[in-house]
Image 1 (spheres, one colour):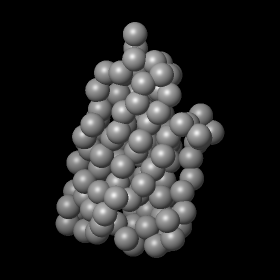
Image 2 (cartoon, rainbow, N blue to C red):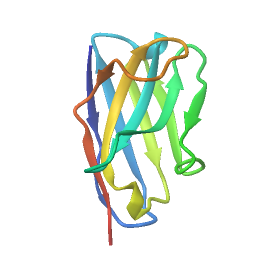
Image 3 (cartoon, one colour):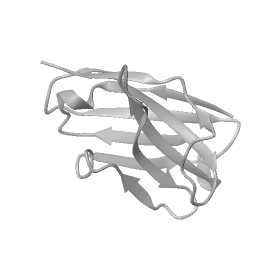
Image 4 (tube, rainbow, N blue to C red):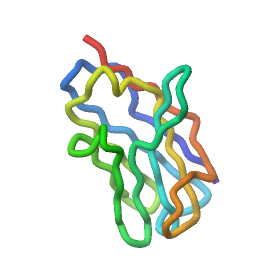
Length: 118
């Protein structure tokens, strides 16, 4: 099981970015795929997850109505981030867990930096 994130970068406040998580060694239909983020000195926090078998999604309150998680195909999970704010700046990690309900990841990607700044 391997996860690789891409799509991070520098964006101005109010802008958009799309993060990609590509899975290898498995297909995500029986996994819960999630995005977390972490800033230095703080714990890693859940941003959003999607349950493969049902398509059900869940978001942190801080990103609800701005971010959208989706499964584009059996190996790619996307996080569309709109109306970005400076407080969204963090390293974003993709996670996966073989489950139909539990979302805490058993596998992690290496992370991708997102910086929101003018």
